[in-house]
Length: 404
Ligand code: MLT
Image (cartoon, rainbow, N blue to C red; front, side, top):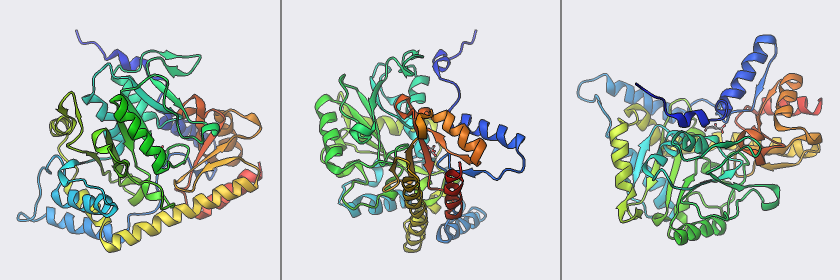
């Protein structure tokens, strides 16, 4: 008789963004004329840049001719893309990563949730609180979380590292030594970035206790402060203790196209076994490679025109971030993030809970954001707005908030 994976029964409600989407659908059904401003899920709004589009058109034509047609992609990614990634993302920053240490995939979300498969079931997992829910949910599905404690709103076997106003939203080392540590900087949801010194301290800590850092750098393109690290591999020793996840979604608008990559140095070994080899085995077995057309699009991100065009898009989003942050502060809100990340993390007014503020904004101002408590108990009393809307909508959102 077939039985289910009972770990799934431990999952709390639905995935955060599904809950938000359901509430929005219900509101729209009851208010068909409302013009909602959606600053909830971190989804981009600007179209694919022309240089990237041209590369895709060319690749589409290639697929239609026998002599240029491409079947299955190499499961670890085409050499042209892995080389472009290494040159532009790593060697330019003085980081020594080889093309065969890059694993091209359909995005950072899949990789940062699938990666836990290659680690022991009993590994202790540390996550920030608040946190991108995918890290938690994927470990719940794998049976690593233990039961959910309703009162504390925490899973009993996960180690939560509070990220609060008092520590500047940068976690302190946990009291119990974890085996796997998820870090995301610039951070989703708080929008806060980490200094190289603090990140180096995390690398040193991981090396000391034998942990692996699972480093999500999906938002690195939004770093405006030149002193901040774009990659964990800027820290010395990280190649022995860290795995990095990167994405083309937020920097180049690929949320709909899907493309990302994971970096694992061949030097990362656990009990003498190569983690790189294990992930290569996993990737090759369960994944048939990102589409050729999309990998050509990824390559075009690094062309001079592509680079210039995506930088202009990022600047537009960061103009929104700056506007939202300043205007909310002027309106009396306490606001974080938004300087090196496309997320604004604000304190809800008058002690409202995150979901109450969500409902208020949706019902009275027609604005969709994301309740901080959906990212973890320490997100309670906070609210996330994205800078991925249009400038006009960001301006109107502030007008509506002021009018509340
Ligand atoms: C978010 O809103 O947190 C992100 O868009 C989610 C994601 O990248 O999967």
